Length: 403
Image 1: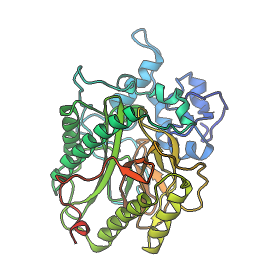
Image 2 (image 1 turned 135 degrees about the horizontal axis):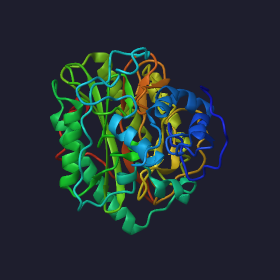
Image 3 (image 1 turned 90 degrees about the vertical axis):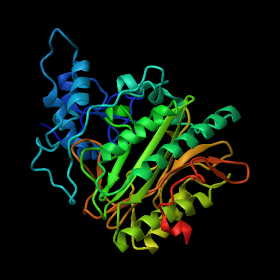
């Protein structure tokens, strides 16, 4: 079984299964098995190698074709029911991979069944298929949209709801709560506001938000692990409402956190604030990374390079990409009417990341902790409007804001 990407194919409508960049390569084993291209396409050999431990399990999960369903349906069922290596409730998700080289102290715990969405809720296309086909096919993957005044107003409403949902989760964070319970809060608050939790079933992601604990950089899957005193946890919320998405995240303290972790989280918050401060028409996208990298390095931390900010609106992810590290090669300048996220991920140790075999959970390679903050931003004629800004009712959870 090969561990490199083989056949080059025409994949203009698909995205890399690891990083969501435009895909140009397909897994040769999937080609041999005649599996659907979804979750089998990659932008580079490096992305394929990083995803191999998780991706190869798709090959073994597919059973011989039966009369009661197609290969496509079997793959979909396998992913949704087993979530790659995840087993049924009551068993650890890592039971199939005891030899995996864990980088830190965190381990995957059982995940609960997928939460239901009422029929009256307006859903994006991936809610039923797991594949954001409209997003993949859109020319906004290569062109930065100037939002109309009407769309900007919808984005304001959606982003405010997203902020209120994240605030509801923040109020619940304490030692003893599980990340699955946090996900339940996010799910119910989103539904109550008339929205759809954008992460749910996005490329088959099984939960309504991401919860990234300690050494998890991003895209952690909510599960049955209870948060412990001294942990840090990032909660990443995106709401789909009125036909558009609002995206933000914050990293929270669980109980009493050591001083180094407090410094890490505060530095990450400051990195985002300093980046937002330069946003205005005419600024190059690449300058965001310079500002963030400078502040993080002066504090003794490093900046993750594998994940970036992104355009957002009626699509969950689109152009432009906003790298957070220095000497990046992002092309283009900011213009009034553009909306995008900035979401720096800052590590206490080195900047490199590694993927858990679930295909989603990105962790630090040295096991040291990571923090992240994110806002959705509108470029105005004179500067920037933070669409997901904290509200007067937002919980007072960051001590440096009251100093």
